[in-house]
Length: 186
Image 1 (cartoon, one colour):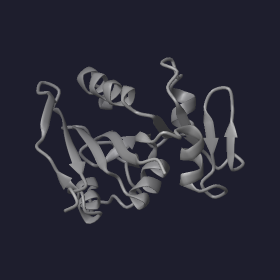
Image 2 (spheres, rainbow, N blue to C red):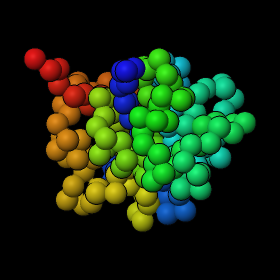
Image 3 (cartoon, rainbow, N blue to C red):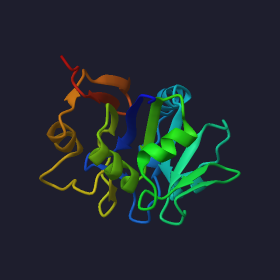
């Protein structure tokens, strides 16, 4: 059986939001240094799992191997633009065997439903970028369980991931990334 490593990728505001109330990523969360780093990470992936909204909002100009998690799919469907997958109808192992049979990194750039799904599956790494000084009242949090009392970091730590040192991507803009990793097994 092929081996997979699940790597989440998100840039969030101070209040753990990935999108505004309408589900759109606000300009305040876009940063060139973060984008370049994110693109390099996606280039390493055997497959990329994202939600329908993200897939439709961002054309697959690099022709990467995409899996679109959508309740509108019937099980697993191979469409012209991507693999479409409904986890209520087909298990994760089945879509991975079809979309990335040799294994490898499965990058997970969201949205929230996708982030939640893999939080339960278990991330091997989660690349959590922060745009400091940005707040998005009424927005969409990275994880459903995020609240004023429970940050994204709290949720990752509760799942056993450990933070590695913060990497400052853009000091002027206040953007940094922390990679949270599952500790090595002994």
